[in-house]
Each structure stands twice: as structure tokens, then as C-alpha cells.
Amino acid sequence: MKKKDIIVIGAGPVGLFTVFEAGLLGLNCVLIDNLDKPGGQCAELYPEKPIYDIPGVPFQTGQEHVDALLKQIEPFDYELFLSQRVDSLSEINDGDERFWEVVTTENEKFISKNIFIAAGAGSFEARRPPNIEDPDKFINNGVTYAVRSIAQYKDKNIFIFGGGDSALDWTVELSKVAKSVSLVHRRDAFRGAQHTEEMMRDLVKKGDVNLLTPYLIDSIIGEQKVTEVTLKNFETNEINSYEADELIFLFGLNKKLGPILEWDIELSGKKITVNTENFQTNKEGIFAVGDINDYPGKLDLILSGFHETTLAVQEAYKRIHPGERVPFGYTTSNSKLQEKLGVKK
Image 1 (cartoon, rainbow, N blue to C red):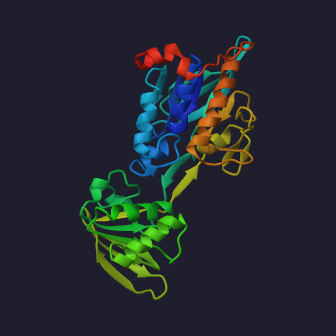
Image 2 (spheres, rainbow, N blue to C red):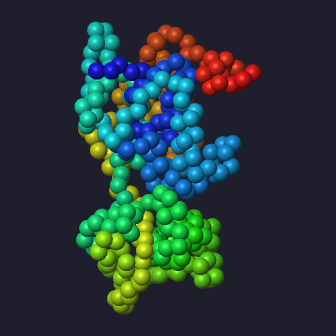
Image 3 (tube, rainbow, N blue to C red):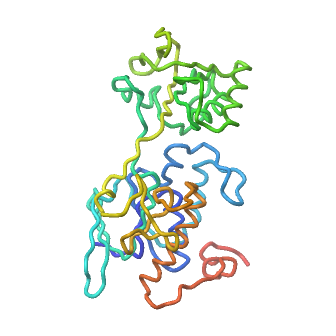
């Protein structure tokens, strides 16, 4: 069993930045994530989608943001355990001290005074198209639920299904490289950003995008790979077939809190209730940071999660070193950090 200063559940951007803030205070971390790579939703769902609201970074894709965070935490003491999730959480006594014990689905065991739940939306999986039997038999052979490489769609006939931000964003982006892009939605109204919808409709007017509303998918045709798709008109029930190379289903995510529901942590809907002083839950030593938490005025933004985990790490330090003042210093004057990063003076 390994003893750690902080156990971080979730290796998305906020979980990764927790390592940085902990490292500045000389604390070590272990990160546990059920995905097979670090980065959370940024890496899994929109690695090539641009992010514009990271302070000081005018433009960065989701994967570039994750890579930058991984580079930033290189000097610090942490371990990363992927493709497993926390299966149990229990409180234990070690002499006069109380710890949290974590056991993963791969039977890795850790104890710590501090648990940081940075699980984003919780465990998630993409919603499948309705009324289609086993669409996953074509997975990566014409059926995908996220765009991970724009190059994959070059000169292809693409059908994008959905009516939210992701569907609109990728319709605009992939129209630049695809042979043809068709956006399919059950109604001629969208839930995404108005500016992106206007861009999509301009592309429709120019003939660069084919807008198919009100349509639903009827069937996927192909043997080893998708070759055709049939669509059903929602109003007339007429069915039409189209040549297709790639089908991208962007119906959103099914979000699940999983074992978190069994930990007696106070919830607000499907989020974890925290205070705004240090983002601790109703359980002492368990913190929730990033999109997983809820409090008055909460905004689901990466930069908000960075603020939350910065304050939570301060409290974690106090729990490890009771009675001691939390060391504070600006990174611009942190000579040890500069030495670790190889900064030349």
C-alpha cells in the first residue's frame, strides 16, 4: 500500500494542474483515471478542437493544452495510473492519524489524508444513435463518436449527426478538408453557439455543407466498413440513401458518477457540493475540483477549476502539516522551481 500526500481521481486538465500546485508546496500526488491516456475530455472528445479561454494562450487545441500541462508538471513528484477507476474509498486509522484508503479496479491501493475528485463529468460514454442495432460493429471503420484526427476525414463523404456545439463546430472545421459534409438533425433548430450556427448556414448557402433537416438515421450499410447510410424524413417518413465514408455521432455523453454515489458525499443533482473557501466536501479531507463540483455561481470552465484546485491544495498542505504556515512565494522568484525547469538566469 502506497502512502501519498494527495490522491487525485481524474487526470484531466484540473487533475494535472493539481500536481503543479502540490509540487510547488513539496507535496506528491498519484493520479487515477479510467481512460487510457491523461487529459480527460480534452484528449478523449476534442483533441483537435481549439480552446480560446486559457489566459495568455490565444489559441490551443485540446491535445496541445494537455501536452502543455504534462510538460509543466514534469519536474514534480507524481505517479499516473490509467485504464482503472477508484472502486472503493474507506476511512482508516493509523495510530492517532486518520487516512482515506483507495482501492482501484486493478487492485492498486493507496492511503492519503487528502482525496481530490477531479473527475470532470464523472465516468462518461458517448450516446449511441437511437434505433440502430450495434452501431459499434463499424467503430473506427466509418463510425466514430469524437473527432481525434482531422486528417482522417480528408476527401471523405462525411455525415455529422447532432444539434449542439460539437456538431456545429466540426461541420465548420471538416468542411475545409472533406469531399462533402452533411449535417443531419431532427429539426431545423440548433443548441450550439449562434455565431457557429451562422457560419454553418453560410456554408450551406455556398454549397459547402449539405443541411439535412428534419432527418433521423434509419440504417448503416456496409460489410467491413461503412459505404452507405439511409435517412428517414421526420415529417414525411420518406427514406433516402446516401453514399457515405464516415459517420460522426455527436449526441452528447451519458454521464455517470459511478462509485462516488456510494461514498456518502453530499450531492447537488449529479455534482458534488463543496464550500468556496477550500472546495472541500462534507467529508473532511475529500475535495472536489473542476466540472464535478457545484456551488453558488459555479462555472464549468477549465480556468475555474485551476482556481479551485489551487485553494484546495493549500488546505491539503495544512492537513498534512497542522499548525504550520503554508509556504507562499511567486513562481517568478522560486529559484528551486527555476532550477528544476532548467531556467537560465
